[in-house]
Length: 251
Image 1 (cartoon, rainbow, N blue to C red):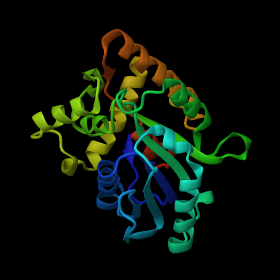
Image 2 (image 1 turned 180 degrees about the vertical axis):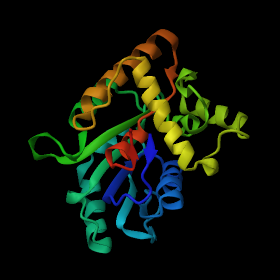
Image 3 (image 1 turned 90 degrees about the horizontal axis):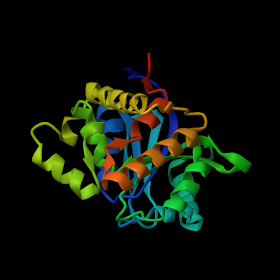
Image 4 (image 1 turned 90 degrees about the vertical axis):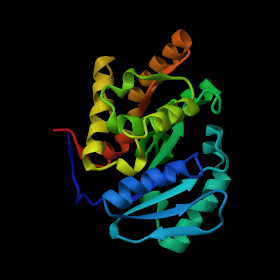
């Protein structure tokens, strides 16, 4: 696995549920390490923030209207944000790769049938069925903090937690090893290898052209684990965006 530092990726949109943590994590990866430009619009702040760097690689990060995954379908709100991105920043959403970054925390996102439907709808970052705007759903089990753990812990997917708060406590208890500010090029590669290792262990292949196949198999595996053990195996799909964009290359 190799990280390609000078890869130009055009425009990329991350639509996230969290009000702070995901913004900081994406900034750490794409601005601090990869030196891309990032535009941010948070739900609790009417202002936009822009960090200027490589104009050929621009990351926009916005919130859905609420933190619940159902807000992905609130198209009127998203269209308003998309229009502002086009008008203020010449960020053409229709020609951007789009990733929806959400947690599978069973306390905050409870409607499994709705999640399964989204998995089958949101399968490609650039284009989906019936001329639907592109968008790939990237879930984390149980929360985005699983990605941070996978940057630093070998076989992080053997760690089992039920809620995002449980993962946060684990990180706090192991702050000497796991911390967002310690993420670097090597740890990003490590996280991708952790994802690859987990999927190989459970017999799942990554299909980035039609990610719904991979996504659905992982989802059902994790749901069965929750049913039998009342926990998820720690796993985040965020590395799939880096693979999809060619920033990570699996050699």
